[in-house]
Image 1: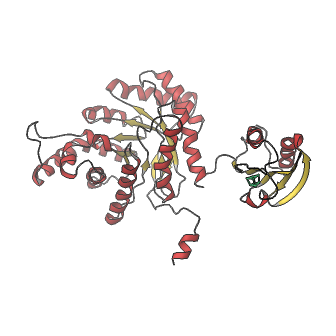
Image 2 (image 1 turned 135 degrees about the vertical axis):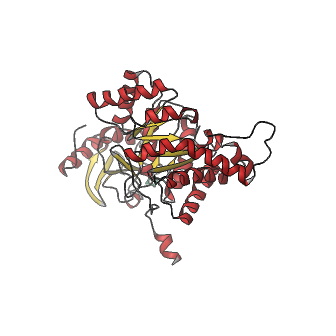
Length: 396
Ligand code: SF4
């Protein structure tokens, strides 16, 4: 009934098959996986190893590298070895291009997943003839693509590795553009064509992405993909992303608008936030999106009121102090509320509360229970003491 649905506060994730990428699994009942990409040159072995490690240490669970040449593909063998020797194995993904099928075959030996972009597999008509494609021409090109792709699919299948079919709105193949236009439908058909080739070779370790730099296009493409996959009985996990999101606050908001919206609808099994900043900056954004939606809890959840005329202390300053003192504690909800009038009721069931009591005094709460009133200057210290008394403190 309608009412039950409105009262439901959990996100019901779309059921997908589990696809292994090294020691991480995407899809199935697994948490949404966080990934990013290093920007070191893959030929710089030590630099790449350091870059991969830096990302992995802050929570990037799968790391992507580009492989523009055969030398880059071979370098990955060394990178992989060095990671295993000096750190630990990290699931690696290689980005390869059509003109590098030999490169793809080489790199498939060293990484856990290969990402291909269907838009780069072009067998188009000569210039000048580009008006439309007949069904026969369309199919003929499809057959050529299959022939090209087959060795890679077989290699990944036989090694138990994965493939991402990564469609980009900005680089659709020409015949898709002529047939479906520059549309989400063209993106979806492009992905389906490649999925069907893989399925015909009995390979289903697939992850699909349909990125665009415009959020409404990306939303529409993923939703349409889900609808088509449901109709066709396909359950491939989806990799979400907004390409070229830019930087700073707007880059983060744009990424969140796209990725967060789909995740809230239960769509998406792995995410990448693409910022024009150091890749390390992308990881906290990914985790914040997942935490805000209640999909993963990896940090303290702070609940704080916006402050108003009733506020009894400098909320911004106190929130900052509380955060600095407690941010290393995972799994806790801590509220900082300006006054006792509305504060305790609006703490959203936080584990601990720091609430303005009267001028110069604050009250500490455990859940909904007021534990003690303390002078403001002892507030943070006493909050830590309370968490310690409860055995929920760990040293940073
Ligand atoms: Fe104002 Fe109190 Fe609400 Fe904070 S909790 S916004 S101080 S009324």
